[in-house]
Every structure is written in C-alpha cells, then in structure tokens.
Image (tube, rainbow over all chains, first blue to last red; front, side):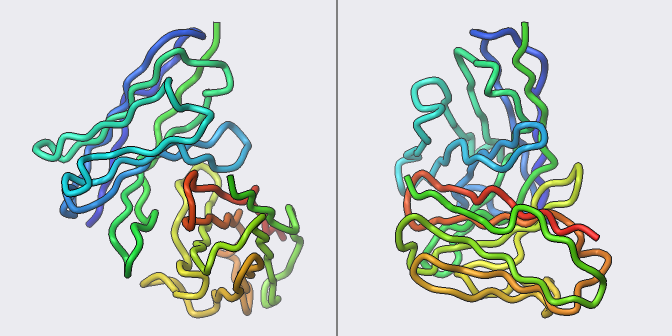
Length: 123
Length: 106
C-alpha cells in the first residue's frame, strides 16, 4: 500500500523558515518524481514544486510564487522528501501535501497524496 | 503559465443525475489533463488522467473527454459518495496548474 506521511507543519512568524518532511512507503521512491502541492484554507490547489529522480540529476521545478524561497530535496536512501521554506509569507498559510508522481505512459503523473500538514504563517 | 478555468464553481444535483464539469485551458494542453475528487478534510484522489483514462479502482460512472483546450468530466448516475469537490490539472507545461474547483452538492 502506498503511504506518504508528512510532518513538520506548525505556526511560524512571517519571514521565518520551516522544513517539511515526507516519509514514503509502499513503492520504489527512487523511481518517482515527487511534488509538493498546497491548499490554503477553503481554497483550491496550488502546485509548489517538483523534484525529479537521480537519472535527471534530481533537477527541480518551481512556480514563480515560491521560486527562490522554497527548496525541494530528497534522500532516496531514507525514502524521504523535504520542503525547505524560507522567508515565509502570510499567503503561504496552507495544508501542504506530499505527492508521488510515477511514470505513467510517457509522463510523470501526480497520483498519490499524503494526508497533508498544516503550515500557518502569522505574527 | 497555463490558466485552467473550471465551470461551474458550484453544481447542485440529485442522486441519479448526470453531471458535467468543464475545464478550459488558456492554451492547448494536448490531452495532458487529470481530474481529482476531494472530500472535506481529505487529500485529493486521482480519477482520470490523459483526459479520458480511468484510474484503476475508479467507478465506471466517471468519464472524461475533450481535446485541445476544452475538457469535461462526466458523472453518470450520481451517487451519494460523489458529492465532493472536483479539480482539473494540466501537466503539459510547467508550472503545473489546477482549475479552481467545482463543488457538487445536493
């Protein structure tokens, strides 16, 4: 059974930093692209970024809203994904989901989601 | 960035109804579109990918269609378990983007 378990969410002040973790099991982590997706309270889904696999040099993609502030990394030896968030803003308040994106056909597809961890940015 | 516009934002329906949700992309996405279902307090669940391919385990009353910039999710014979919020998502280009969601309510 595929499982993704996020941790690290908490209350943080504007300008602060936070590191989220995601522990996975039930699939070959090193073969999957991995994403973070967030959802502000009562709002829609926003993709936060992606990290590819070793064959792709663990390259990353980010939207403009977080580029330069957020960094995604992974440790294939620990089946773990991370999201380092710096210079947090009030608008970063959201539930953050860890997502696995296996190769499906010729594309890496957002497929399995964790239960999410809440990040609240407030003074 | 590719903007994904979903309509309607809210849809009132009854058990047994057929409902259709539309997702329009700001540029062609060559069928690189997924649909997700989300229930309150839960993570989204993949229903359909590649515009029309049903994810394993998803009931056959769900179907997807479309091409170019216009895509639809159809639910036939709406069941009580289907009352939820539905999101489309394109993966043709970065940044990956989602539609704003359609809440299907009783």
